[in-house]
Image 1: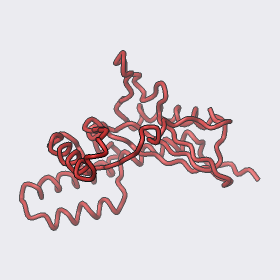
Image 2: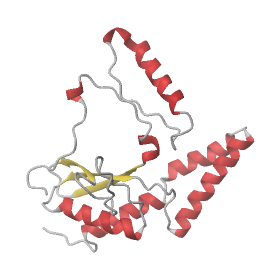
Image 3: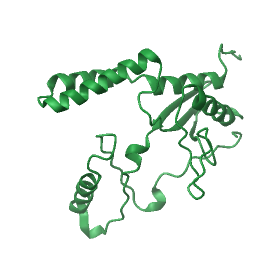
Length: 206
């Protein structure tokens, strides 16, 4: 049985992008409010208060919470229909103008900005085909403020755990206050061939 949705796939993705830009998950909001209550330093409380005020205004006005609206990264799980990549791409183009989202897609060599957050291999789409009779689309807006502070290292095996810890601490100290996020993400892989590969469309998807 084919069920016709009241919205097109493009509209669904547009709604996802709008929501991701203007509203944070409830648990994150609760955590920030709790942190503001517990914080003993007056300067830190002021900063947390400004963040919370910005979040409330963004949701009320339907405007992005941050001037850096990130790079949209999608996960498509379930039934993968031909043309879904084109639908997502078109939704990104529309949302860049309507939300609005800052155009962050820049050619790494020519430095030319596409102006609509699309380009070669963009937006990023990860496909997870399953036997389910539905398609689930998720999106994450990956901000460049923290991405610019990313570091990669290949350590000598003899350095062991101490070398890993030293690399992490040195990276955090070197980044200082420049990243816009205070969260540190750590990943390890051996060898490089086992690292995640760039997403590619499965057979039948465009």
